[in-house]
Image 1: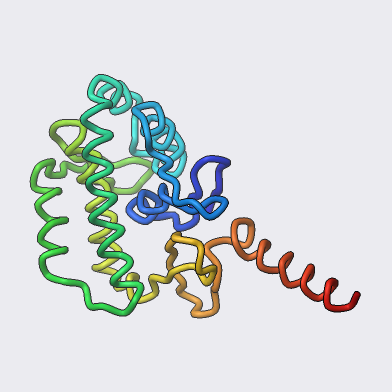
Image 2: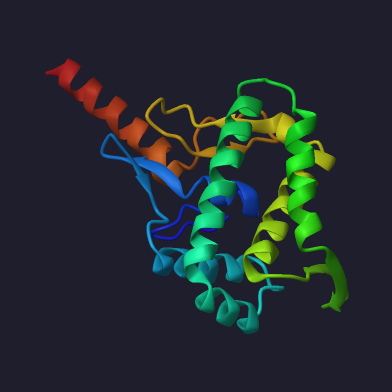
Length: 194
């Protein structure tokens, strides 16, 4: 998965990558989606991973960026709450599935064949389209039973979530938390040797 300077795209899943737009830096929880521009930047980065996002969608988002920002933040709050509970071993509640299905109902899908692959394309208001994509991704994770592998980073100060299908992964990313832990252990050993 790609990591950018601003957005840690560590999961390859749209819904988890949205949740991970909230992180901890220098001991402070930070929201990476503070403005309309931040949402546009995030969507631009996400577009690289999702070829079905087109320029026309970005034009629509720019026209309604304020509303899009509010809807994205509300969706992120629900996803974070539910995903954290699931990562802590709680079952996936039926009302969460119903919530996601309602988001898709507001922008139901049509399909297009792109690069020999059938791609779902939501139809509706731009904020509903974005939420439909995100809900579809979350429902796909549920349908493929991947959320049983949903984990929190082993760094207690980190709030990033990821899917650990190997059962061995401890860190959200070696670049973000794993390396910091290794450096801290190295410095501790060196100070103990002195």
